[in-house]
Image (tube, rainbow, N blue to C red):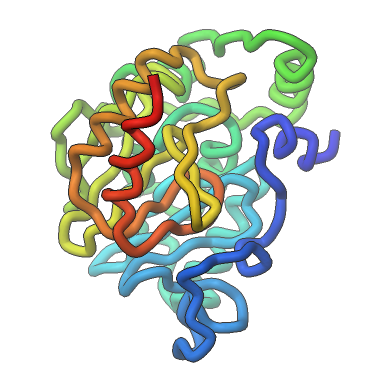
Length: 265
């Protein structure tokens, strides 16, 4: 089963982010930044995106490393290579691995990361923990795409792993504020880094660099709750939106989210 099938299910293209149009790109940016003409690396100081993992994965680089989402199965080796070859850090410096929700294009690299960094803590919202650990059966999505997803999960699904931290709304871990965003899944979360004014939205929002969009409706479990969660995001203050799919949205991302929130019902 080819990975692009799942990517088409998730309504995004399996395209490297440096090939997607980004109006904030600065062709005079220093080599090694997200906005140079080479491979994307640092989006804002201390926050990196790992390319080509078919579900965005981010690394917050400080005294320790914090990974946010782990891409599709097989992506763990790409994230580890980024840590060693680009960041010149060790895998055992990963302190926390956040999963914004249980879908396999966000949890697929988790097992490889935990193997390389066994002391890293896996942090998920408490409502998502059963799906990650395998103690709760995964929901069934309708239609042909849902059937294809079940087939992919059967042959490629990530290994269940017991989370270490069960998050609640308002918890802070590694300077990141957990914002509970139910709708796409029951325990979907966003993470706000107030110091850099960056918000990681998981799949509750997406961006093509110009427009803000909601996550894929087919794989959203409660569209009404998702609308409420989007309005919650609109109350936050951040400059850069980093979503589970798509490209960074900056500057003035929170004002764009407020404009979008006014259009949904």
